[in-house]
Length: 176
Image 1 (cartoon, helix red, strand yellow):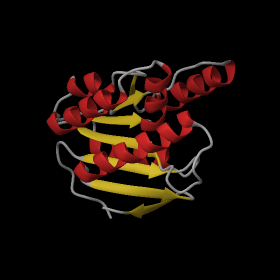
Image 2 (cartoon, rainbow, N blue to C red):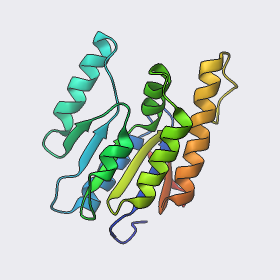
Image 3 (cartoon, rainbow, N blue to C red):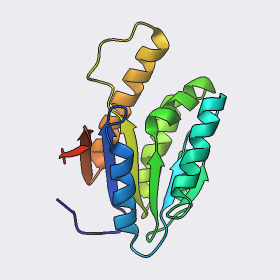
């Protein structure tokens, strides 16, 4: 179910770990960008050797298809620098929220700033986010705060999105 291409389109790709949400988002970004290179806004930070290797591998995989911007905290400012012909893929909201938590940043303020940037931009933006509401209640406060934050932010983004897809086992389930 492809939507007609338009400037300023917002797409939310949700799913669990290894559900196919990033592959779906990359395909959508390339489709929406036409002959232009989409921007891949990567939020990951390397806190250990395994994550350094993962980030390096991901950079190599997308270097021929995307212009990569790495920003772990202020993703709203990156969105604001792009115009109507740009396509931005943000991977991922869950990692971004974790970064905000670890940096002891004002999460509600950052969430409001993201929503305002999404509302104001004429760029097309595809957001990759984790669906964490299908599991049990986490045992520690940080994990519960994360689950609550991502669930509420996903709701806000989904409400303004043109398209929302839930990825399950590599299959897209169109929600909106």
